[in-house]
Amino acid sequence: MTVDIAPIQPRDLRNAFRLSRERLARLVGVSAKTVERWEARPTRPARDETRERMAQLREIAELGTAVYTAERLADFLTAPLAEFDGRTPLQLIERGDGDRVLAALAADYEGGGY
Image 1 (cartoon, one colour):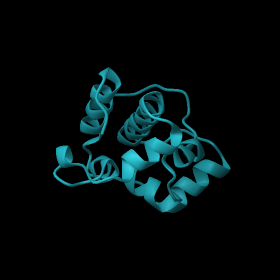
Image 2: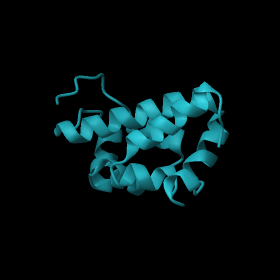
Image 3: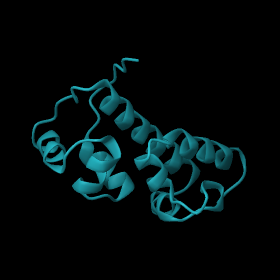
Image 4: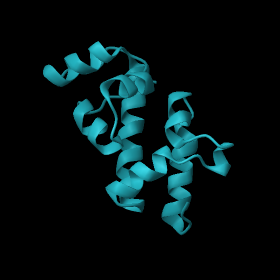
């Protein structure tokens, strides 16, 4: 599936998730040097999979900020949760299970909370 989106600024994602370049790189499957280059000269990632993962991160950041404050979103992302078998949402995203994180945020948006 090809995702045609406006360029996503890696620095915006890093700020929303409070991540280092290295951690963002692991989440989207590139090197930290690549993230550094994207921040210096904004370009679209070449691989569809990378663009899709970045789009998913942006969606998680937007929904997470709507559900929680920016501060609480950072807490949510780094908290081991029973519904994720003791893993953190960031660990799930890194494993490619970002859809589960989005589903949990959507449930929280509907009235739950972690």
